[in-house]
Image (cartoon, rainbow, N blue to C red; front, side, top):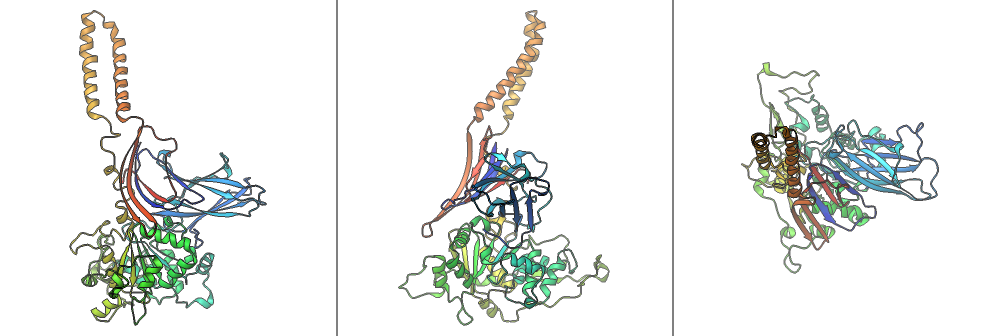
Amino acid sequence: MVSPLMCTGVMLPRSKNESLVTVWLPVVIGLFLSVAARLDAGAAWQLSLPQNPKKTRSDFVVRLDYRGMVTGGYQRIRVHVTPRVNPFNTERRLAFALSYGKPGTSDSRVLTVRQTVVLPAGSPGTVETIHVPAGSGYPPSVRVSEDGREHESLRYIGNGRWGGRLSGNLSLPRVLIVDSDTPDGSRRNTWLQTWPADQLQRRSLPDFRNLMKSILGHRWGTANGYYNNRWGAKYASAFLQPTTDAVLLRTVEQHGGLEVLHPVDLPERWIGYSAYDLVFVSFPDLRMLVEQDPVRWRALRTWVATGPALCVYETGTAGKPLARLASLERLLGLSTLVPDEAEEPAFRGWRVPLREDFSRADSPFRLANRTMNSAVEFQYGVVRPIPRPPTSRRRSSSKPVLDMTQIPPDPFADRRSLEERRAAAMFVYRDLSLGRVVALANPEGFPGTPESWWWLFHTLSPRSRGAGVGAFATQRLTWMGRHGAGVTAEYWNWLIPGVGLPPVTTFLVIISLFVIVIGPVNYWLLRRTKRLHLLLVTVPLGAVLVTSTLLLYAIFSDGFGVRSRVRSLTHVDQRAGVAVSWSRQTYYASVAPSQGLVFPSSATVYPIMPGG
């Protein structure tokens, strides 16, 4: 068994309800990241067990729901357990096993997450969150057992597809915006279905449309000069009409790379953020989170320490940008970069972006956004159709909203001078363990301009102007870039050299000697001794001997133990009391462990499968 894994770990105190990730894989390469929630808003996938409660007897009613991104990072599945009739007189402990694997595959390619849910005596119900690795487009199979006995009525074999929002392009940043003006919990679902009449013109949410346009390019608003393609009609209509909170939230529901959450809906564990690359939050909301919800704040801070970026806006006023840097340092628990007795320098020692990067015309994500036979010109986030002869004008099955000669006015066009635009887009940044904290000078942060967002992206992931743009060129900004590989991209590069491979040379030598000895040599010796009838004995006996030799060679060369190949990087933040470890681990076991590979709940584990 060869097992390569991508892992990240954070050393934190162990939680009361420990959950374990168990992997059964014949060959698993992985990335491991270890670091020693509640999500009420908008469940996109729901499962109720038993599936037919009227015909199936069960002591429990179980409901699982999920909202979020299906690819990259971890998914948060909320498990609701209630008694079917009356509360129980004794405590009940249910062991949940959520298994992931493409339907039709064998158990050797299954990843299983196990967690125990405790229903106290007399309780009307309980809710727990199970974090499971993402990456499969299929929902999990669910098995529930109690005292070693499975509740067959609560069994579910995963099939079909997730109802969640797929965000398959891991080479583009996935953004989370935290805002206290967002409807929280189930109120968000209610508002999305029927927006309150007195809130129709509500304009309190950050206008993120320019941010997403700078990431997605022409795919956000247009495609080849039309707004009537599959995605363009949704995004372009939302982009051009006046902004309201109703429009913005509906846009969030249609886009898999963006999420907007109320602070109370944030994860309580850092791995709940592992699907995101950038988090934006205002200074007042960050202060409220730190002071009123230390559990969720610690989860967010720990996530930033693993390598992504936290962007804080409203860090100043219109008259004095970045005036709250000192307060932000105290809020985040950051050390002071300059001595207190020294004259306070500009920006308190925080790093400033390169001025020349503000006017760069190359998108950090131009390769990921490039499409075949595209008839658009993309510069500073503005899409302009390339003129074509009238005969080459494209047709569509539906009536086009915009043709090749019509260019809509840019609602975010900035008519100020270059220096004025650069001053308005100013920001500073500094390290937080392996991650970054960015303070935006713009008092409101949003909507910004495409060139201001590109300035931020170029700064967080610097590269030369002539460098190629690929999945790994924007390392800090994307999930694929930070993890160094896709889930299946580099399997064969991480095997243990010379271990677990067939002994080709030895096999050829032994089989050649076998053919020579069992054939002409054996025949010549038996004929010389006039015992040719013994060929019926010597040939099969020789075959058994050679086969046994190969088997014994494999056993003694590979052994029965476990061999490993680990490359790791550990960062210790003594001030914060957090240590972050990134590692790539490859294990080889000639006999697969009966319990698989088991990892603690403070670590993210991504198996790398062959075939990618």
